[in-house]
Image (cartoon, rainbow, N blue to C red; front, side, top):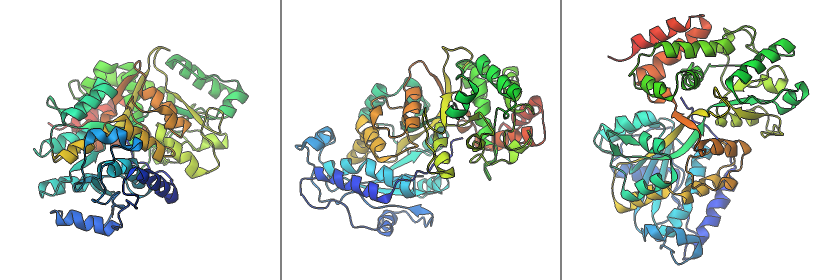
Length: 488
């Protein structure tokens, strides 16, 4: 499961970006609406939304409805295809709040200014709980940005989600791989274009520690195992530091480990069958995969560097588990690209880069040529097919939006949209993640737990992986228990 990340972008920077983008408006006046966050929420309620979620952070509307489309201006030339949308309004609901929400609002400010459409954004920590309530009450947003395909299927089952229009499908066919389109498809109908993405199969390390010890970056699984053995034999520190504690979601980081192992040792075809329960959760190939994982991180000789023993993995916060690398007491920590924000949380002066304090390499496959990677992403679903809604959907599936989002985000965001100008990504780690996601040779699979029934993917899978470390349960016992929990 992919946790929501938060980035530290100064509000002034976002304000300056939005102000700069407003220059494409033809009136020469300030296009930023003076409506407050409360005012935006009131408009939503007036449209039939009676929810009073106090965790909502709506931000501000990006444009007033008097702005005229400025398609003759060079800055707005790419937006001419969307037409003059003056006087229209599109409501957008998602999980992104605070600075992250401001970054998203900045990313579509030019669309608003150039087309004249008002984009009224609302972000909430309670999004996943509140969206079904709003849909059932007849108060669905025009657009919802869904954090995983499982929620898309749930929403499609309500009968309220509209199939994606032709312009959206054309963009997805051009800029994404077929597998990403499949994740936005339910029962043969394409509903939701992918938006942001994450690459999870990375190993973090200290370039300086590797250089001092003479270690090389492994390119195959056997090389990673050999490196682990060499680090342990050298005795400076244990190889791996791991933590899976995450409050009520404790255990989810271990599910990412398992998924990486299944993709490597059971293969992509069996991974797909396992996620769909076309083979049992405790299939022998899955048992083997968990045993391979255990050989590295359920091994007292190799963990838990700078923290404790194997059992400490269950109690060590995921957010902190990589920090022993900075202390020089750990060499290797497997975590997604978005873990980069944790380093600056620890110390704003830490640098992330090939020659920085910390860096990452892709978790190897069985051979140097194989590139298995798991990841996550979000998807744009529409509950209305009004022209302005369809135009905004198409924009969100375009390179123009991806480039605007990259410009607005200092670190911690990437997409699998191949139309993105990678030079606009401001973080070296985001650039590395994009290179992985855009590589046609990568065997990509979506985070399996996000595709499973919630009773398993956000339930027994988490708890049993926690028991694997805390109670020393065997791989077979763990997988048998999860299999027994699968809904009949």
